[in-house]
Image 1 (cartoon, rainbow, N blue to C red):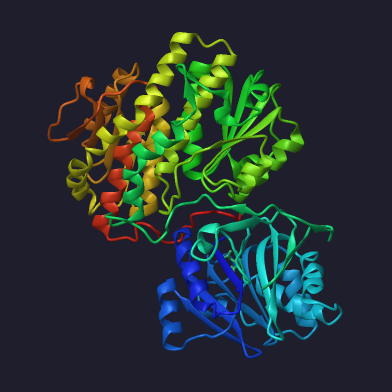
Image 2: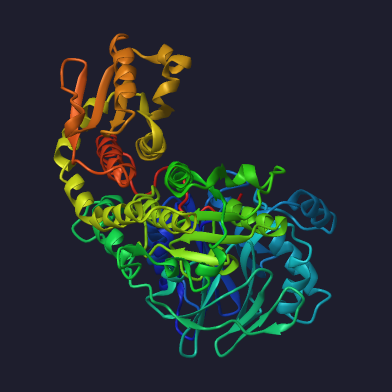
Length: 609
Ligand code: GLU
């Protein structure tokens, strides 16, 4: 789930690998480790906590060697302690790093114990290194032993294996967890994300599902799931991001919040012409594939799910097609109904979200008319496996709590609404309004960022709070959900979101002076209804923070703080009201002193189910 880096080179690689891990830190992890082959021996250093601790340990006791593997672990099996940290080693010979989950590890562990192997960790991963060691007894090469091993593994893995008796090679295998090979001059690398390798190369080949590769200093030989030699295209990376650069900002999250006007301008670039959203925003074959769409099924997790929830209002209200939105982990394990002429839309920043990817594969088997992904990572699994891709072009998002990816997803989904709507008879006036709104988003977000100071002040009120309630109606209900999620993720305050109409069906019982209530209140046709909900809270002594349009006529008093949000149209209101929600959670987290960019227990790219 977290990070892998590996290298076969002539020079010492420990520093390169540690820098690689640093660049993957944003994904969240709990421990880190590295192993190199030095003079026919494996040298390993592992630490619980940050990569910095590992780096300090290696500085005081340097690791020399040109072949090595490194890992940041996000514990799935066994607590985050040093003996569970990767790399794992079998019989002092085979070292392994692994991202993912081996589902049949209990059975394999019993079998290997029966063969006399001793386990030194509680991880599922450790079965891989013993299994490779065992298979080497009956196979002539490390490659063949790893190929025989992966055939016995059930679950998801990106794994790299080295053997101390052969410092010339590493074997790399992928099934379910992404891996990319980096090509250098007389040296090769592997990582779970190209970002990790940008200091040493810009040439990359992405492994496909089931691939096993033998990587030496001079050669990379890739074999598919059936063992056939295959070529995977080597591409020059266009990623410009330097993961070490927070610029003037204290945190990546703040930087990314402030990058939103630019990210939105970038995502719109070249996708609107003559007042219309171009079909080509969704890929070359979009005109044909989107032609007869009558139903949209959106699948996503976490923040991306909230973007999908907002889009449901738009697709049904404005595009005139029916739309369902479902959490990927639910969709993939139930029998759902396939409507005629259905488009499946997955949303994922990383393009590697395990549940979303599994849902896409299921949908393809079910016979959806077309599949589309809204994704920020070129070359990722979702992009490769979908018929169409809306590439978000938001730039790398490093903060674990998603911000700019969310607003760019909203913009992409509004464009989809325009295109699907056009195919279903949306009138030209409405289309023009939507495009105008899209084009004025960057400037409007810039204005909304002007709320920063006022929100920083207001955040003080939350310093001693343990709970918060978020309310919204219509497409602001998912924005309330996103606001609650952001607050939970980075400040660890328990937060819930409700559609305001639900208040009296339960949550009203929670209202007292200790429960701040955050209300998102643009000036739309639901405003009067929302005002009644506000009165219901006021009557029960609740303290409210109302983010409201200047024309909504809310006034601050003892029980209510009103924060005026720049006036905006209904097409962009969800997006604009997201900005103060992001800023609120950021400032509350600052006051609480949490690790804003890498909140506890969370990972950025959720490549395990
Ligand atoms: N399941 C493995 C473990 O718990 C790997 C976790 C990861 O992907 O970091 O050690």
